[in-house]
Image 1: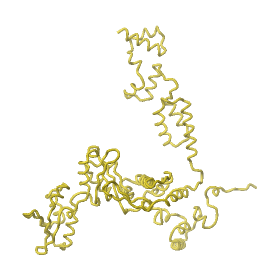
Image 2 (image 1 turned 120 degrees about the horizontal axis):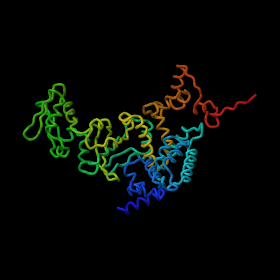
Image 3 (image 1 turned 30 degrees about the horizontal axis):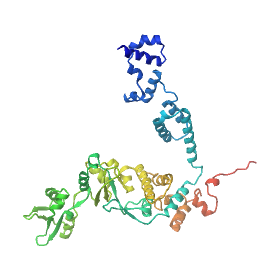
Image 4 (image 1 turned 135 degrees about the horizontal axis):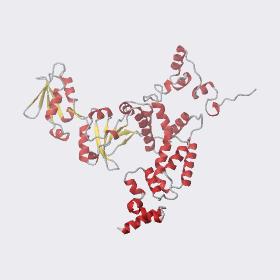
Length: 446
């Protein structure tokens, strides 16, 4: 194939090899080896840095193109946090083939300038600024407590009551709810999503049958609703086993008309026994009172629940549930199951989404500061006398917040001293606060 070898010689000469040498060595090469481009080498799963080196060796270094090494070197030289540097490297590598060295310097200069402007001045009262930044828009929040999550009318607390719930770190929410994401095979089919909803929703015997107490033979008669049994995928045999599990003396026998006769042991009075059987969990997770199947804008079916039981959901390992993407609005549960960092992120997300839902724009950094203060000791603490405010070292600051007399009396009994380091205590005694211009002491030379 002389034409191909002539093509090889031409490519070698383009790479800077002299014509005589190219003629001598053309037999050692294939044309494809010399004309390979960046994309083809990348497809071979060769690292980008090596791809560049190969192209340089082939004499086809593209003019003006910024190299990966240049990006690494220049970004590392800049005085920015490592997290910003890593993000910057990723984004610049994507567009580097469109950049020149001058463009790169200009971009890095502007980012450094913006980062400089975004930093807080030394001794700035960030806590007070955060409180003002959230408090002022908070006065515009409606007291419209609930909204519906989809057609099935699941109530979710919103507005000011929700913000109060978050900063008070309440464990018992007014409307606890979970957003359960599903695995791909269930997320795209409504029937499978509805089957999972039935599995998760709590079902008691009282939901699937009628119980009547008979004083004649001191037993209970259970009339089962066949339609409900079928709808909730419950077998009679499983139900009988559940009832027998109440105690060793409990007997269950079937009667001709489909009813079940339940004999209790002597430990229970008949009314107590009736209540116990009626409230016996047959299927699902205790505490999940309702489950709504709803299709999200991305086309996935998601389960919304009335009631939140994250730990039980995790322990049951229900097939088809994607626990890694499942969320709850109960921050105390998140801290317990997923850890304090997850709880911190949940505080930020919940507060931001509540404010945005009301059309209020608050910088995320103010919210982040509050979330950090609430979680910095490894547990979720409220902003109040039983949490952050009540644990301050300053006596005057605690007394100014709530229960003034009790705080002062307690401090006097224990002989506490106040170093007057914070804002509140300095305002009380009428001297400049140690922030801003008040943070500087001038010393006169002799």
